[in-house]
Length: 268
Image (cartoon, rainbow, N blue to C red; front, side, top):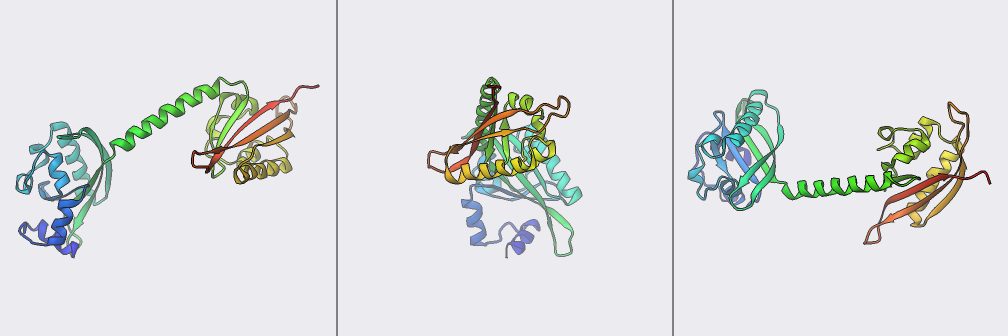
């Protein structure tokens, strides 16, 4: 049914009375829009009308982007549309726009071609969403992560944080120096892959470290381990170290991962 509705719309039958379809366009909070091959709007949701500062469908249908939006936005929208029309591929992009009531917002868009029954492109369809809050939250997370990284980098012990999936998500500078491994080789890996690749510990000890990780997160308790590293590839020196791992517990009591700390023990 939706396909037939779209065909009618793209052929200019704007009086087509489908209550379900029109109710969807009227009620959805998403920016939904259809355009013909020339880039004229043929149907839009009420949310799209609001973004353009309009209240009636007749004010937007049949118009081009440069008649509705500031030049910067219009150029971006048209460039996206041309890719869809010329290649037949879906375009995913983001744009900052000025909303009449919400102010400056960030929207993401997914635009794809519309085909007729013969497979010929007859226009395009798009759905955009306001992702401003998500963007701000991501910014805040990045700022908090950056501050945490600075704090960890100033602690003179090797420290690392792992996710619930047991992959490294953060290490400090001392970890890189202590284990002689770069951060880019650590993040996203698990203990078995990291330790085995760089041969930091004997095989049996690597297995024990993996078991320790699982026990910490499953039991929600701090665990300690004394272990010896493999000989350094240059100095041939072994380190006798202590490793302490603790679960990271959320306010709801869920284990989110673990934090570990290790340091070399003195000769005495």
